[in-house]
Length: 76
Image 1 (cartoon, rainbow, N blue to C red):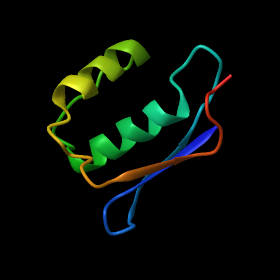
Image 2: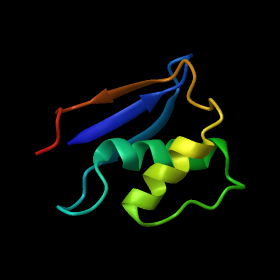
Image 3: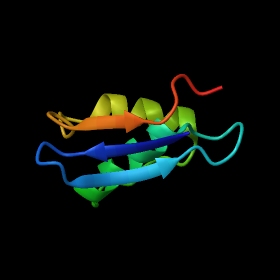
């Protein structure tokens, strides 16, 4: 599974994939990469559940008007 995130102008913010069973899905990998590129001063958690919670609580609208394309949904 892969995920690409584009900003409102079509610029690629992230291209990531699901790397291994039990690890973060492609969508979370891409969101984390894009978030880090937009907010490099922020340290992100490494563990998938903690990372998901952190981004949900701290995104501050950074992805407004962005779009994600995913190669397969849902992940299996």
